[in-house]
Length: 129
Image 1 (cartoon, rainbow, N blue to C red):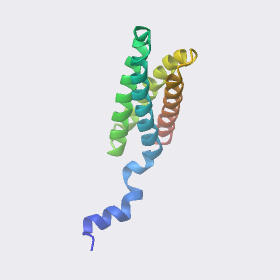
Image 2 (cartoon, rainbow, N blue to C red):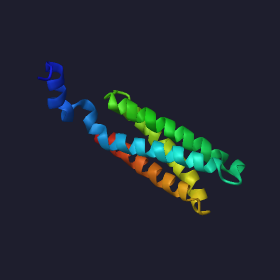
Image 3 (cartoon, helix red, strand yellow):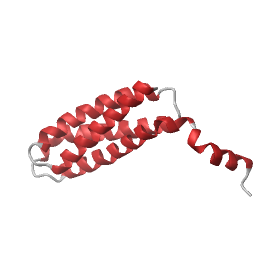
Image 4 (cartoon, rainbow, N blue to C red):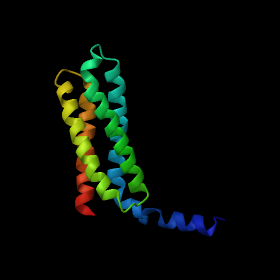
């Protein structure tokens, strides 16, 4: 027999405060993964020194996306402010990756797409909350 606390959690899982943020949390976590992958792939490119800004933005974007997802999972009062910054960093990262995507770097294509999706999800979350 589940404890009263476990019963409460089971019954109320879908109405917990962070549930309203789930689409944005998923987009942030997917973006963090894409950015980490992009940074790793950029480091193995022949002219890595030309990709320094891309790598830096990938790492910054992954960090802010993880932080935003964490704060939203807590139902934090600061989620909206953090998501506003997250969208800004995601757009900057996407812009940089799009430059390299145009040169055929598939990892930058995927990263830019994930960043744009995350920025859109963050902006939607801000608008709806």
